[in-house]
Length: 118
Length: 110
Image (tube, rainbow over all chains, first blue to last red):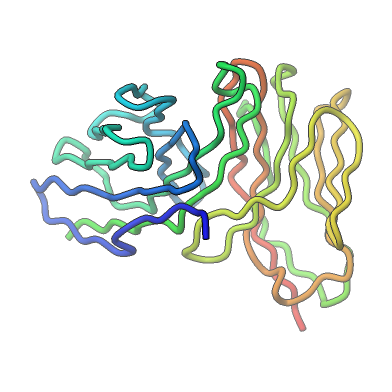
């Protein structure tokens, strides 16, 4: 079955630690995204990538880093510089259309990772 | 003013009722509109996609877009307890990134 997988489902981080969230897709989608979801704030875009070895900052990139070494994979690292990392993290992907990333951008989401800082 | 406004609810309805969920937006560049359903502690699932104004029906779900009023709706007929979830509207187009509403929490009471 095609889809997006995220791991782990739950993650606990101690103060000062970096942690990496995994996101893998087998939909053959070019574009991948990371969002953060907090109660009452909706989805906020952290980073996105249109193509392998290329990515752009979203609205709240500070304290996060990403890589896109393979089309299928887009891991997110939450660094110790992120002061309030406790949240639900969602990875998504979409077919890149016509060279304009957001022209037709139906995104499909993974199941999410809940990160808690201890 | 947020680009996309959505009432967070919660909205409680009896089983079998018709549910109306709505979003308003301010950016006239938005061209396509989506509704996602999100169960608690799960990722959003795409329900409906519409391009420009008009209606689209899929089973018990109808999506309606009125670009002149910058208003979109999702109607659920014969609502079921399994419809209890948070419903997110989303929209994008051209060079605009997809923007999501904060979601409306729906509870269908048996």
